Image (cartoon, rainbow, N blue to C red; front, side):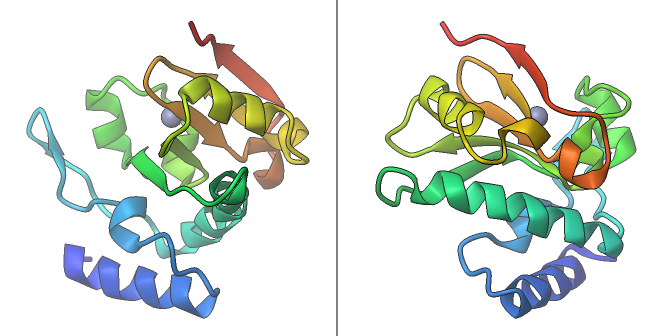
Amino acid sequence: MTRSEWATLCDARLKASGITNFSALEICDVGRESQGVSLAPPEIELLDNAIKLIDVLQYVRRAGGVDPVLINSWYRSPDYNQVIGGVPNSMHLTLGAADIVKVNWTPKQVADLLDNSPYRQQLGIGRYKTFTHVDIRGIIGRSSPARWGKNV
Ligand SMILES: [Zn+2]
């Protein structure tokens, strides 16, 4: 599947699910390179996981007045995940994880919001200096919750 085939297919699926504020290339920037390895598109079946994660991202987006949620990293294909140093069973491989920033919010505020949200028992939340990792591990049958990192 090419970058443009992925974008067409995924954007149609998002639109059919009523999602207008996240796009295919945010979910997977097909062709992005790291150390000579190109990010490949995901299996289309995994889009169900992305749509479940988007419910959580919309919650973050709407909290305290609508500010955009920016995506640093969402899907990673296995070889791409390996070269950037991701853990082998990374939730990013499932489309059910994203590293996010909410405009006008600190990473600590975003992580605290998620940690106090109705989803909290089902989430993985990673606290980093410049972004927050959120994943839906409990929603797709992996053990949950999980927490790591700390905000300074
Ligand atoms: Zn992550």
